[in-house]
Image (tube, rainbow, N blue to C red; front, side, top):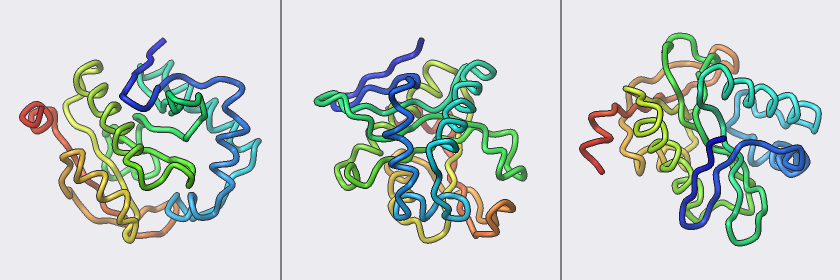
Length: 179
């Protein structure tokens, strides 16, 4: 079972006890504002999502990690790797993504977590390239992408949500040159 540690975080696989706190994150309209069509998700949808994320671990050897605060054990949200099926024009690809509860914004936790996922992608899973997708206007996520060393690859429209998105990318060679 893969677990990653950073100075402030533990990135680990999902547990039953994570469903309620992740459902609270997914129920916040401000958190979900930039996710697909902006709809919030309830506990049942969150449970189904976590099950799908765990299935991705089994089928691909990577997936989305639960992000836990080392100091308190509190679930902050998620980060990790997923195949961006919602944007078929960029496939084949692996996306690094994140979603943290609002109480955890503005402290660099998403960047810290995502940087660990990027390291995992290249150093542990040997990926050649990763992408990250943000809806146009989601400046906070774009800032994280830039901090991760990613560069704008293309602009397009998400077919599922009908919203304009920007796709950033980072190659293994670019990553290796930055560490």
